Length: 221
Image 1 (cartoon, rainbow, N blue to C red):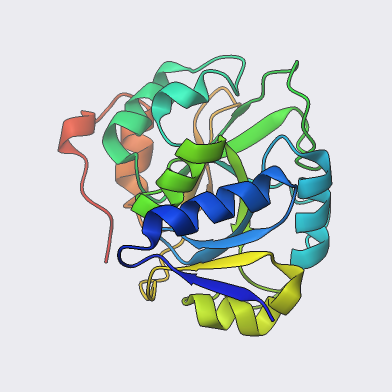
Image 2 (image 1 turned 180 degrees about the vertical axis):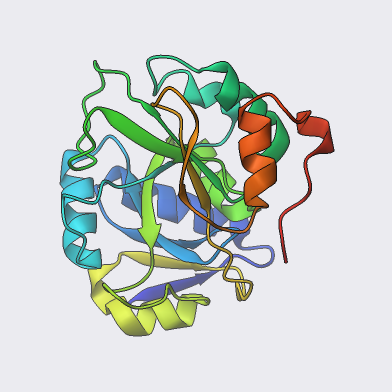
């Protein structure tokens, strides 16, 4: 039977440590984020990212996104942090904003057919950030089979994936279901790839230097 670990109370620290240990073994862990529940592996584990694609039914043509614990961690993953990224992180991180940037070419990972880029975000979720703090950057995708909505509870994820996932961290429901806004910063001008839980016009205005990050509106409910 899959292991569902309650991390809502005193067992949080122990549960996170157990999840980190599983991730270090190249296994898949389900965890909450500020959007919905996701499936995660060590971003630098080739076996882990291969296993994650198989479990989630994700094709290599759709690269795996990466989550980090702070903007500072981004510097080790990308070749350059452009001013637009600095502005957007100041305005919307942590939160549902994914930045597509040029990946550091020396990194030994396999996120899929990323064409030399990496999609990165910092989730606004204490459990997710604690796991990242314990291990490092995670490759993460929604806890869902293809063409289905990601799970909003650990129980839903466990029913769907069973023993294919090593552990499920249960921190209660994630019912908002907000999508992450995705912005490509590898082009000459910031380019919106997907609308999400942020005001699109404000995101692009911040990226272009037309809006002060401190004046950006909050995440849409």
